[in-house]
Image 1 (tube, rainbow, N blue to C red):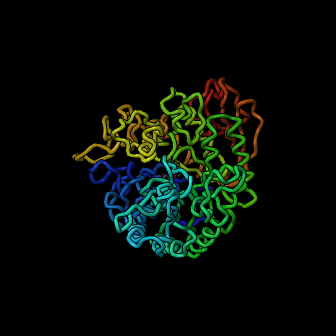
Image 2: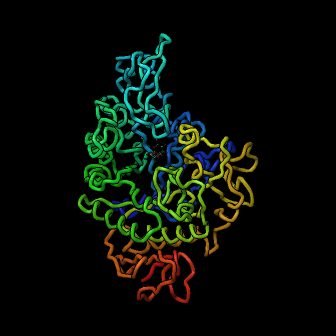
Image 3: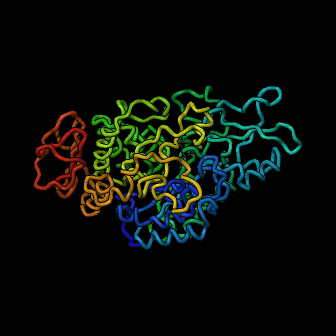
Length: 541
Ligand code: TEU
């Protein structure tokens, strides 16, 4: 691994969702063997690091975000020694490896939770979680009014050892994901040990799942009793920062630069930036940018807000267009309303112009890669994949779908296995002779979107990403550094970066003139007699 100063500030990071990246053993589900066999893909794409979504032992109530053992790999994905080999092989290709850490909750099959159930009310084992007696005469009502993200109350009642209905435990997500009690010293010690376990294995950092949720108001007050403008009892409690200060000390005690990126869905920019103080996390996902939609005014406002919020703490911003939880941006940008919110059901299934969505997605890719900071690519972004919105219901696995009886369409549509090569499913996702098809069906139209079909085609989205990432590396002014806006007219965003680099994105309906330049470095689509067409971006010198 070559050591560079603060590598994350300008890094391009590729998110691998192991279930859906590549299947090495032919069971229809991606695995570590598949990732190892396909490592040349992110290398050739030109990214600096991989973020690997959870691969730990899990009953898969939430696709691996329900962890039963933080120190081992699920047999579905492979073994710990394969994971160690993957880390070594990635390093040998100059790819850093970030693993997912899920500290808010574990699986109901985790040994600590099983011990808590067995030990009964009032035990030290239960104190590691949030167990409470129910309300109502017989304790038949949940302890408070908190809802689960996946539908229904955030509480589940357990059966005690004597066979009677007993206490309730808190789960902000699925019932199979009990929340840890972060006021308990065992929990803190355990996670510090888990971090060391993976740092000892050479990982370069951690993506922290729901990073602002860990600490709860100890009174667990009803949401209905909390003033609307007051602090939330569930999100962004001040006490969470202590945890990250101690985590940072651990990461900093290791050689090389080991980093954290927090999953922080916080709209308050000042509160967000607190997580990025110099002794806390290095970076946090910038979701307001993802949510803005393809809109010049909203995107510019978010970019300005982002830069302004990060400056006082000296942190590097991140730019994310999609991930394993959000509707793929080709689809979002193909809709009349291209914004994104948690009410996925609102837009799901409404008309999509995939051609328009693709043009906008390509332009947005050049925009994000030209902005100051670190850029994330979710597997399949580089292939121009869209959201699959017609998965047969009986195949859907996402607890967000099942917990809401289908009212929430869920997130499986962005988790469909990648197409690598060939004219039909499984498109090289599984090896020849696989016993079953991919865990979710791939659209036949993806035959034109495989890695093989796009490789060498200069007009393909894959080659656009490869060229853009190569230029981004070569241009000294990209990655970290300053941005200066140019006045390029209404509905056009244009800015310069150090070294005479200019990025222009045309959000308007008509072609516009390009600012003065002597070299066109790259464009997201063909120019129109030297002018920049609608929904197109260009990089100039
Ligand atoms: O996501 C947390 C989160 O807040 C949302 O993105 C979540 O997907 C949404 O509220 C569900 O409707 C993280 C992970 O990225 C996600 O995959 C996990 O399901 C979740 O935490 C629980 O670990």
